[in-house]
Length: 313
Image (cartoon, rainbow, N blue to C red; front, side, top):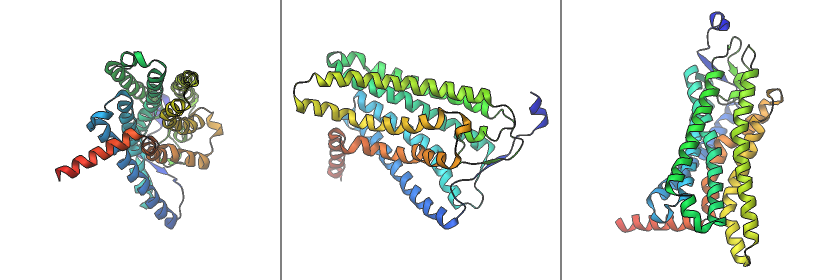
């Protein structure tokens, strides 16, 4: 390509970040260090519980442990570098580091969309077809849905990364963000990015909208099934099993649809950074809390695990 002969790629990118005020950066460092520490502890705790306590070795918790892995993974792709840059005088990342960060973040975020849809299908099968549940959500089906989620996430992230980093960054290497996200990097390119924007909209739109439709259809069917339950106690118990998943879906999809399904001309760097910090760093901390606080199975499993360790002592 012509631009490859005229321009050399940058060796690094400089993040604008949140602020240049060092005292404020120190405060933000400790705030997000606590957030990231809780993210690691909460998600690792759920993964350990789901894989060691026999009562939680069901399809629902198999999906939940994978959700925790994805939350932990894409948060880890962003948070450590962000924390380091709060303390650094020069908030930089190498070109290869930027590639890796975008690759892993895009892969795990897209995979999470598909996993949330699989979790909605699991609830639909459990509530609407309880007699066929073991067939419709067998171990083979669960494994297939998980593999599909990671495969689609990997393919879409490879497409985005390969097309983004083939662009000529012939001007500034200053990224008005706190991590290597696609839209801020497209803004630095000095060539036509219409194909990149089209693919971003098409691929993200296909994954986000199709999975969102699956979730909506599943919960519409669940809603009508629950309404047919005569016992008010049975209705409230059934709804409570879905409340955690609906909360996680609302938080995750609300921010993703806002961020990626709109033209790049409408991006506002400051507001987008606030939205991005929620779905990359804050929401992964909330998910273990959302799925644990009102979940008796998780609470009982934690008690059993704690009592088992206490007995061994």
